[in-house]
Image 1 (cartoon, helix red, strand yellow):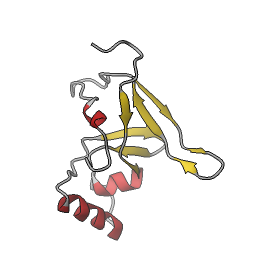
Image 2 (cartoon, one colour):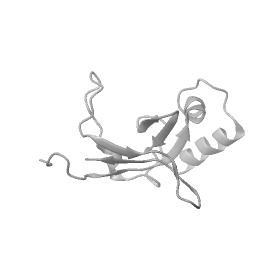
Image 3 (cartoon, one colour):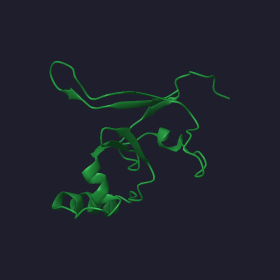
Length: 111
């Protein structure tokens, strides 16, 4: 058992826009040259392209935890039944922010 509110880990991966998700995973947009390179890279490295590890951060941004080369074990945390929208754990997140020098991408933690 994990105590309520205990930090479990950070969900990490490639940050994708809605347009990238629609073309790379959902086949709802025409794929660009960049999308085709991305898919080829995933295939060459035996990484999946199922879209099963997308975490919707809102504002048309997603964290893609499917690529094991850039994600963490936390991609396996949210495996609630497909019949529910509930998460198995709670989440905490930050929004994209300016730290005075650069834009820091959003982050997501499981607690």
